[in-house]
Length: 291
Image (spheres, rainbow, N blue to C red):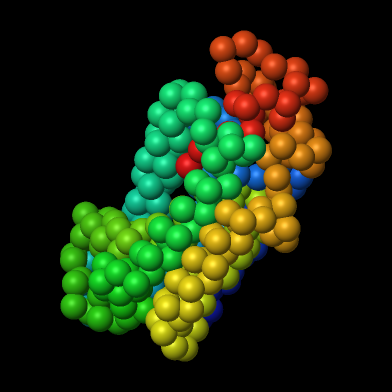
């Protein structure tokens, strides 16, 4: 039993490390700041799934290990074996659906050509509003319930066990739904600050791990709420002074967009007509703030 647990822990740790390495390799230098073009659906989906594996594997590992332990114990007693990978796959399927929903919202908003979202107009205030919204969500009863579930895997596995492959899939989906309920506000922050930013990705992943895994992490919701509101006010007042926040109309953002166009040619089409790399950032569309 111990060898099995060590082996699975190694697999989870190795998968998390591998996905982080892949994310760094694929996303290095692509942070164009808030409103970064998400590209075509296929390219975005591949990046999103990789990011979710890197960000969520460390925090979901205790639940996966506990599920595997209970499943192995039940198999030892003659019960049907339930593959742990089914539980994990359905968990990440829920996060994939969240990513697709966010992409759909992004595309709808972008198609409306809302000029007030341009960074030199209302963009900083939109990002600030997203952070304040995320901070407010930290204090809601729904956040409390979902975080309590995520921090108590034993209660979920023993109290809500379902037999068979279908049961494992449903358990993984249920846990994924609780996890989305716990962390979707943090992901809104991620989208707002720049979904292609490795630095913000690491910050959000650390916040998720802290809340869900570390002792007394559930007591940090108020601190997170205050921090998000303060960060939102900072961005609204002086966005150019925020460390790590790439300004969409900056030279660094222009360079990032050119790198992304090299990786994802479909991203060259940003408006009714095709823009050259030197035109990017000099017009309102490329510097707009979209969710």
